[in-house]
Image (tube, rainbow, N blue to C red; front, top):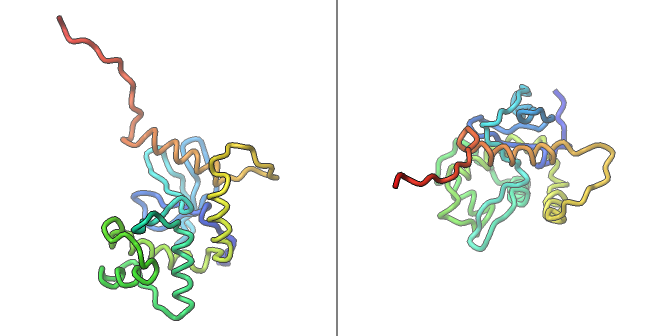
Length: 190
């Protein structure tokens, strides 16, 4: 299998209840069509599954939040300096010590060891597949113009953005697994 180095964070998702990360291939009327990064198996999501796009994920710092793209770049820089990146199964003390190197000001009350382990596991999955050179561009591209609904001229539609909007709508409509009906309050007997 040939390794593709052109993936971007906006094309990769995490699905609640499913291990690993998945690349967005397309969209159908009931969800997204995904491919598991670990084994290449393809599947579709349904309306009840919560999908998180990696480019939308941030980690808490004492004074705000840091986009996942920046955190991953920090991890990559540490690895290039010879630092060993813990696995997702490392003990809590090891991942906490590592996180202090990656993000010295991370919020120790809101970033849990499970989040740190997930970061390490995701990095190991992505390090050979993700284009780290474009992470900074992608992160700034996502922050610029995100408030604008102006159409963008492209040769073909960006499936990941369309899928992302659909996933967000789906998650909010079906958070409890079913659509909630709006009921008019009734007066109790007089």
